Image 1: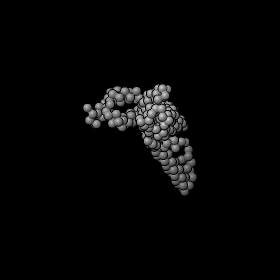
Image 2: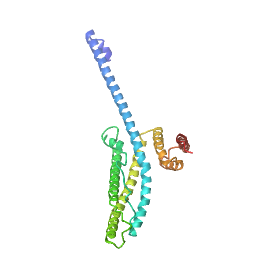
Image 3: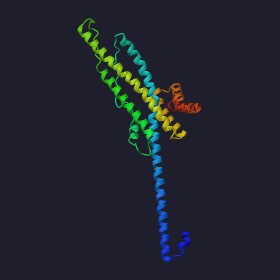
Length: 263
């Protein structure tokens, strides 16, 4: 209908209208292309952030429960000793800072309100970040309290005033040290829980192939630290990454054994 009416008007008006139509179509297509390009750019940036975030979070999910178990076992021994009025030397418990790597987590938090990090994921990341900071605080307290330990000379008589003072001070600081260690156990448990929640949310946004690729990248990083203990790593991965077929996991472990020449 439009074209029939267009050809009824004069040539100048007709060609002007055609030029305007061409310009309109060109501008419209340019906007479409720009929107598509911007969308692709956001998708690429989103996947890059999610991949890095998952890798960082998975390390917390894997290591936090192991650290919590080790700390909990030690904590039970300390509590038993304290209940007997004894002090176990705790001056070697020092945590160097920065103890943990959570740069991507901080970066993701700063993306609040963007299309890259939705609110649900942002909220979960913020909870994990808070637990990590509390964990650092507990470890800082343990480090500071460990510096308060006083070595009691063997030559001192147990009946001497100096011996009694040093022993009382150590027992006092030991009690506070045990409290800080208990806080650390709780923080590690919470970090593991928060990290697991984030991993689930990220998995919903990444392909299965990408998830498996990240898992094996972490496996390669962990492998030298356990000196080729494939039994431990297999059990850990079968528990934490149930979606990975056992045959695929075995093949990856065999590759690492060959690569690092473990017999």
